[in-house]
Image (tube, rainbow, N blue to C red):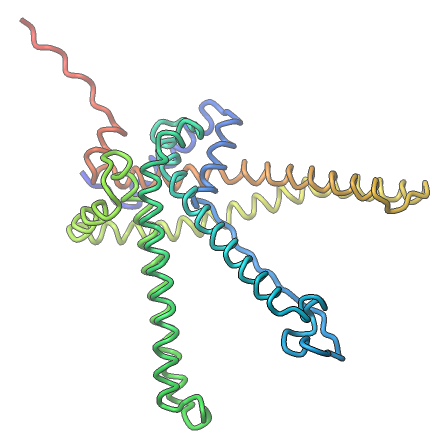
Length: 349
């Protein structure tokens, strides 16, 4: 019988403890963490601020391109455009590449949770074809999302321009504010819809593709029928997953912060001691000292990444397990794989 979203938490916790701790295997932890991160199960966000120095005496074509550009760039606009175009093409290529890797890794993660063993090379060989089919679906979803966002920006802007609101904005403050509020709600609704589609694809369509080889669209057609007959169950799952994701993000962030602090204190102390000793000995910055500093920085970064991977593994295992234990009672093929029935003994002759 289908279980509620809250009832799937306990078996998911039990599964996570069993897979990671009984027995504890460092290699499994690291492989699961790498697969989970590449599959998009664990994410991070950050911001970058680019502050270009301003020159108070711009000259030549730098007046157009900005004083912060180097002189060769400012004096050769075609070179600048070629560089920007190349960066855009490289960026798009990297996005597409990592989307394909994430699609294949999603199936490897699913197999790893079911089998309680993670084998990246074997999984890649077995799942690259079905992963490519998921990648095509994800690519179409990305393009549709981009088109929706462009339409959400372009259509209101075009309407406002046609009404002349931008020529005299002071005369249309009320209309601009109301339109902005409506636009914000539509934007948030679109973000939520895309996020829900992404989550349900990973949690409920991928198992169908992995076990039966159906396409992503066929998996969604079947899932849509199931959702219509169990709206409360799936809505409760989405709500519970949001709560669990927030709690997990807080716990993992605290654990990583404490671990990094514990590691950086002795490492920083050693670094300060070495710097003071080097200064006393009369060392200066040269090719050798800079190389040693770069190597030391890479070692520290590798240690920190190792710790972050270890601390991320429990959440990476728990959330796919949570979706599997929620979905298995609703999907017979997954239930048969998760809870195999004992073979029936032959009837006596």
